[in-house]
Image (cartoon, rainbow, N blue to C red; front, side, top):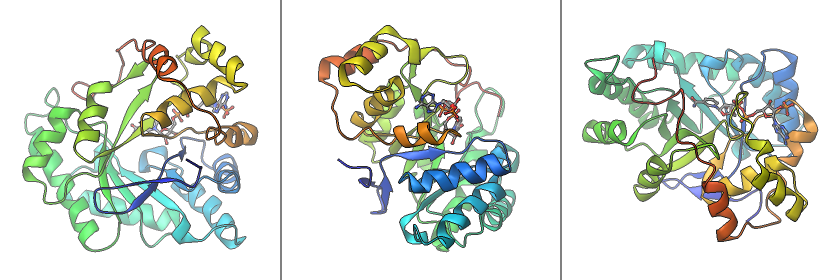
Amino acid sequence: MAQSATYRLANGVQIPVLGFGTILPAGPVTEQAVATAVKAGYRLFDTAAAYHNESSVGRGLQAALNSGQVTRGELFMSGKVWYQQRSYQATKQSFAETLAKLQLDYLDLYLIHWPANARWHQNWQALNAETWRALEDLYHAGQVRAIGVSNFSVAQLQALQTTATVLPQVNQIEYHPDFAQVAIAEYCQQHEIVVEAWRPFGGPESSVMQAPVIRQLAALYQKQPAQIILRWLLQKQIIPLPKSSNPAHAASNTEIFDFELTAAEMLQLDQLNRGTTSYDPETYHS
Ligand SMILES: NC(=O)c1ccc[n+]([C@@H]2O[C@H](COP(=O)([O-])OP(=O)(O)OC[C@H]3O[C@@H](n4cnc5c(N)ncnc54)[C@H](OP(=O)(O)O)[C@@H]3O)[C@@H](O)[C@H]2O)c1
């Protein structure tokens, strides 16, 4: 498998096996990070209205497009509607604003950022169904090539599947060695839903890159701890979405296609899972 490899979504659209995350400060940092990531070979960009930097992402992309390094058709641009824009009309409005800020006339993938859940919303199924109906209409209108969700539990996916006319093609979930949502990922992969991993390095509170097993494997393969984690995700057919504002990190995070972890090593990394998060889809306030 190479960096240019793709997975096939349920509707036949091809999605790159590695993406670039964009939670970065608006302005030059984001613009340069995006332009640098295109140079490093990233084609999938994970953006969201909630990151408040879509205009900066758009400027970084336009710089890359104008330089002729890449064509729009080679990019895979993904966006998300935030929970405050939940509902049919607000979602469509938010999508239009996202396109304008990114300076694009279509997206490759659009996701519901967070589900309404039973803890905070009595009518959570109807709220999610209504937001999803807007995504379906954008899909049928050709404004987005694939649609999906983020942070949906199995129960939330099953509820959505009872009213959906187009099934979600992607579920983007928190997934890293110290919090691996194995059951959700397995359910998705059994139902033709491609899984993306957000926060692959575990976030600021995590020390997973220092875990002895990860450091030992890094030494063994002459790789960095970050590359061991990304490779572990890749071998699970889960799309990692690392972000970096450091060009050397952004480039090295793509150098994960020239080695392979053994089944026993994969298992060692699986055992780091602590199984707890502050972002449980069934309870997180969204
Ligand atoms: N759907 C959701 O609800 C959701 C939630 C959170 C995140 N996301 C998505 O997931 C993406 C990634 O998550 P994230 O931004 O929270 O964090 P992340 O990618 O897990 O980690 C980023 C941190 O790791 C560092 N880093 C990156 N590459 C490294 C390397 N090779 N060696 C050492 N350190 C390295 C970065 O620092 P440097 O900049 O110094 O390299 C940065 O501090 C987001 O940008 C976003 O697109 C989605």
